Every structure is written in structure tokens, then in C-alpha cells.
Length: 112
Length: 117
Image 1 (cartoon, chains in turn blue, red):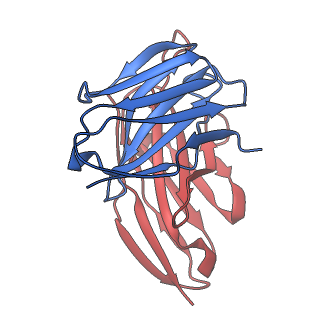
Image 2 (cartoon, rainbow over the protein chains, first blue to last red):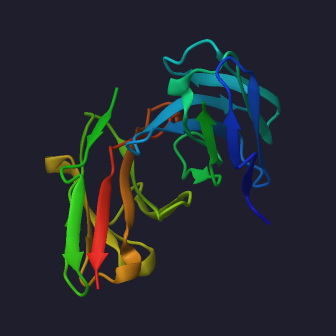
């Protein structure tokens, strides 16, 4: 079973649409993250939640809104998609902040 | 806030060559250090990590890294690379705080390693 699973794996959508990426971890971890990897492979943290509470919120447009219904789930909702949002979005989790982070398989978002 | 720099963005080696990828971080306090690998089209996987203790850590697939505190470095090494080591390699760090908390991981920009048969 995949420890950190995210859906969809591939998403192609038009500018201006609203889309969501879902993430679930079955590791019993307390902390979950969203990272964005751009076309140059640069990885940047977007958000981090610990026990459903937001603890890291980097400079990200407010069109991006994370939602954590419980500590095993951290979904990412994106409003009014723009071309520059095209990237790979990785969900991740760790037992606590500072521990080893385990990544999901990524969601390839292409905005056309 | 901490930052991470990886000196080589692209490295091309022949099989059986020795590998060393540089990683330096900037943060004056206690840190956790990681190397992750991303094979083409795949997610990031942990190669090895350093939290404390022996500064020479061994990871999967014959990789090792050495933490040199005085140089703020955590270089990745492998004595003999294989074609299957072709991938993107990321160094990452997070700062640890005395209260027990820590930041999220900050990644370097990655090193694209190509191994030629």
C-alpha cells in the first residue's frame, strides 16, 4: 500500500478553472506538507500542517488554499488557475516536524 | 531562515567513476540533514539522513555522506556509480529548535546526475 497517496496524478485544465488535489497518508504521521516543484526541478515548501493546524504558510498566492479535515488528509485547492501554476505538486508527511519526510508520487498539473 | 546550496547543477560521469556531490547550508544552529533522490518521472525517495552521532552516514544503494560542521557541509559520495544512478539529487536541511520543534525542509536546487554506460 502506498504510504502517501495523492490524486489525481495527472491533471490538464484551462486557465481560470478551480481544481483540487487530494492527499492521504496511512503512516499515522502528525505533520503533512505540500511542496511545489517547478520546471527547473526546484522544490519549494508551500504549506505544512501539524495535527490539522497550519504551521507553515510560505508566500503563496491566496488562490491556493489547503484544507486538512483530519491529520491523515491534506487537500490542496487552487482557484482561478494560471499558466504559471503548471508544476508538479508533492504531498508529504512526517511523524513530527523535523523528522524524515515521506513524499507522495506527485501530481503533474498543466494549465493551458 | 536556513538555505541550501548545491554546487553542481549538472554532472556527467561514466559508469564505475566515483561521485561526490557538494552541499552547503547556512544556519548557525542545530540542523537535520538529508539527501533525497528523484528518478526520472518519480517521487522523491530518501537516500540518507543525519540527525546526530557519527558524522559519516551510510544510506541505500551504496551512498554515504559526511557532515562537517565546521564547513557547514554534507557532501554525498559513492565510490562507483552505475547507470541506474541517473537521477536528480537533492540536499535538504531543517533547523531544529531547543523547544523540540523544527522547520519544514528547505531543499537545494538539485543536481542532475547522468551516468553514461
